[in-house]
Length: 428
Ligand SMILES: *[C@@H]1O[C@H](CO)[C@@H](O)[C@H](O)[C@H]1NC(C)=O
Ligand SMILES: *[C@@H]1O[C@H](CO)[C@@H](O)[C@H](O)[C@H]1NC(C)=O
Ligand SMILES: *[C@@H]1O[C@H](CO)[C@@H](O)[C@H](O)[C@H]1NC(C)=O
Image (cartoon, rainbow, N blue to C red; front, top):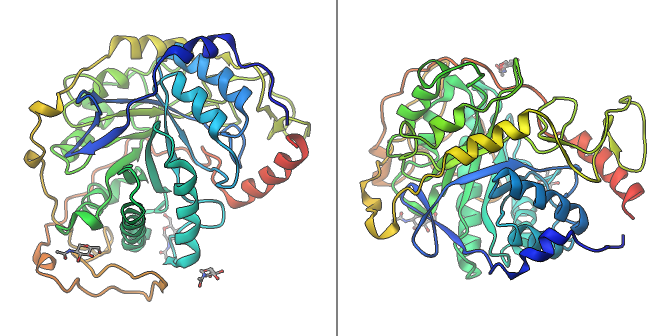
C-alpha cells in the first residue's frame, strides 16, 4: 500500500522528544525521570491480523486518541514480519505507549491441554524481537484470557513457564527490561488465587512482571462499594508487581459514563493500581466502540475495508456521548503518584502459592514449573526447592457482579484466518 501525508497534527507533534522508557519497580511503573506512570489506554485492534502496519490509519487514530487523553494502546495480534516503524513512530509522537500480546493466532497456550514448546517460544520471541527497539513499548502480554473458565486453572503453570522463558530470552539478548505480564479474565472463583500464583514462589525470574485484569464489574450507575471494585482493591493491596485493568468499561445499560475511572485513579485505588485500558477503540457488533469509521452495514456485506458489518479504516468519528464522557473522566483524574526516589519497593507483599480446593483453584502450592517442550500430563509435582513450603490458605471466592461479555475481542483463530484473507484482499 502507499502512504500519503500524515495528518498535520501528528507532523506538528514531531518536535516532541521521544517518549521515555518505562520500567516496573515494586508494584508501580516509572518513567525514566522517576515520575510514576499510570496507564490510560484503549484496546486497539482494527483488523484481526495487525493494526500497526498502516501508518496513515495509525496517524488518524493517534490524533484522536491524543484528544481523548489516552497514553497507551493495547494490541492483541501483530505480525512480527511486518514493518511497524511508521505506526510506532506516530504513536510515540502522540505520547502513546503500546502493550503487545506476544502470542499469535497459532501459538496460544491452550487451557484444556496446555503445552509450551520451542515453536511457541520462537514465535513469541519473534514478536519481541520486532518490538523491543521501540521506546514506546510499555509491556508484553504472555496471553489474553488463556484461562477463560474456573475449571481451567491447571493451565496456570504454563503461563508462568512462558513468562519465565520470555524473561530469560529478553535478558539473554540484553534487551531493555520491558515488563512481561498476563491479561486475565475476571473469574470470581479464581480470585485472588490466579494473581497470587503467578507472583508466588520467591524467585523473581519465574514470576510475571505485571498482572492485568479484564473486568466489566462496574456498570453505571454504580459505586466503589457496590460494583465489586472494593473486593478487587482488597485483593490488590500491596500487590508484588504492578496491577491494572487491561480491559474495562461496561456498556450496559449505556450510555457509558465511566465513573469507575474516578475510583481507579482516585484515593480508593490509586496507591495499588496502575491504571486502565478501555475496551475498545473501534465500534463493532459488541458495541464497545469509542469511535466508528462509518455506519454499520449488513453483517454479510463484504468490501474492501469491511469486517463483520463494520468499516475498519478511514477517519475515526467519536461516538457520542461515550467518547466525550471518557475524555472528561480522564481529564478529572491526573494522579502524580509517588516519585521513584521516595518509593521503597520492598514494602510490597509477597504472595503465598495458593492451596487447591476441590471446586476452585486446582494447582496445589508451588508446583515444579513445566519445562520447554513439556505437555500437561494431568498433574503437577511439588517444586523441589525450599520455596515449595510456602503454601497459603485458599482465599474464599467472591462473586462477580457482572460477568465479562462473551466474544468481546477478536481472539478466535477462525476470526484470525478470516482476517488474514481480508487483509490480503484489501490492503495489498
Ligand atoms: C509444538 O507443538 C505444536 C502442536 O502440537 C507442533 O505443531 C509443533 O511441531 C511443536 N514444536 C516442536 C518444536 O516440537
Ligand atoms: C468446565 O466448566 C464449563 C462451564 O464453566 C463446562 O462447560 C465444562 O464442561 C467444564 N469442564 C470440565 C472438564 O469439567
Ligand atoms: C530462579 O529461576 C531461574 C529460572 O528458572 C533459575 O535459573 C534460578 O536458578 C532460580 N533461582 C533460585 C535461587 O532458585
